Image 1 (cartoon, rainbow, N blue to C red):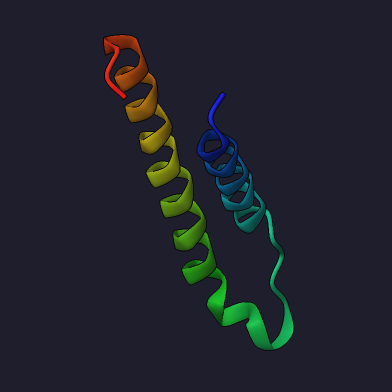
Image 2: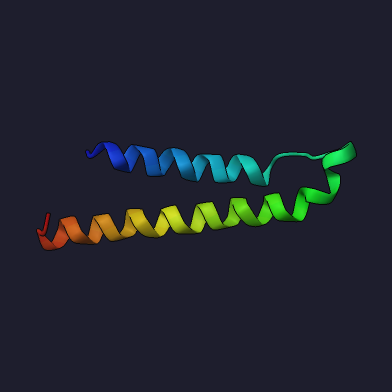
Length: 61
């Protein structure tokens, strides 16, 4: 497997961690922004992994 694929998987896990991050006190108003960043990280890096998988199936490098 390519190293970049592991980086993308780690980024997806970081996105899930951002979704489950409880923000309290001063940071509570930033909770919707952090959720949005987490969702975007999951979606973008998942699409990149799908793209690299399709590219590998077709045989292009």
